[in-house]
Image 1 (tube, each protein chain N blue to C red):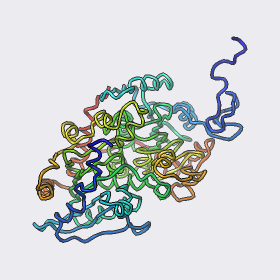
Image 2 (image 1 turned 135 degrees about the vertical axis):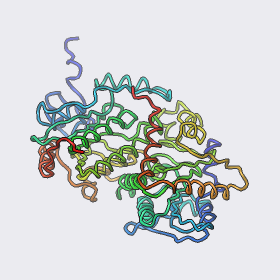
Image 3 (image 1 turned 30 degrees about the horizontal axis):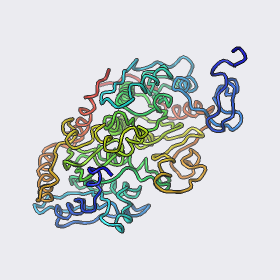
Image 4 (image 1 turned 90 degrees about the vertical axis):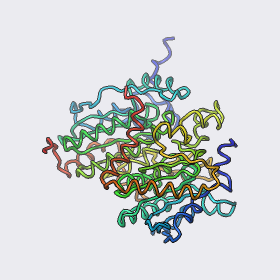
Length: 268
Length: 257
């Protein structure tokens, strides 16, 4: 079947449906027709954001388990691992941004929609503890549908446990910068996403608590075209800035440069 | 509807205002968030018990007939409700009053207005404030409570549940929906630990109370006071630590590897 293109060469744009060639998506993964920003895997996000070669991963691997024997959860985990080559929906590490060091926490929407579960909670908390130890600012890039339903309340309590850690970060006077990317919903939106000292969103991101589909099931209503869009959240005073993908790195570098925290060992 | 859920959502279900009235013979109502308005689903304020113990209360109920259900949005708290609760919590912290939450609420208020006014931040702020309280706080599940909205009240030192009440990451309907109808709503209740007994076994619920007791309201008031008295022996720092440890221990049951 040599007349067929190699699988993966062409993909249809999730927004406009047009067929886009690999090379057309380009470095920033933007649809050339409708200008939709394609969701980025966490690895690609890190490559785009931090100084080349500066990223050191914090925790190596986790192995999430289906402790409650929830139907199909094992299979979903298996597929997510295959698809992303990651063990969970978040990558944590240390990196520099124009030489300014920070702890970075990047969620991956390609791993079970970036949902918050026990493993993701533990990884995020461990990264924040590391930040306190090294007196470093924290940058969280969110991409999540909310709490992972397959882990029940065990996933939900991640919200208050992470917020308890955020309180310690605040007490240590370390900056928390949250970058909300597509999508940031539910339990992630209603916990640490908006708890940043600086809260920004990537252009084109959908951000909210209850999704548009759920709202329309509850009440028959026509939602505006820009409903829950980063631009409308900015207009309604819920964000400090909406930043285009190619400009995120410079923006974050500038924020870190303004705080002027170079880190260092803790004393006492 | 599933029989268990029907009971929790029934018009004659024990409601937060009933318990609050019995608990606090004198009460100063606190209404409104000073920005967006007043949420009728929230019965909040502070007062003194018959034994002169000062308490702050936050009650969420669904309403008992069509008119009150409409007024109260079926118990789905709006941004104004969470923000009012936050005001009550900050006031309680300031004057050293323990905070008692009594809830029976569906999931989030899924509406464009709640989204527009920042439902996410409102819930996050209340979860965080509850976690950092240096006064004791306690939650009573009088019916059901799900998702982040219920967690905002449940981030407490002590969790009490009526024996037929439910607390979950999402409503049983939502759990059934993600399984694409492979399970009924009734089955969904047993799929995840959300019943009072299950949560007691797993260390999240501290007291489970028989909802059929004829002296239920008096018993609840008594148990709330007993728990508050116990907690008042702890320092502010110890209360914050106990609260976090409670949820940490619960989560630690889930293996790391």
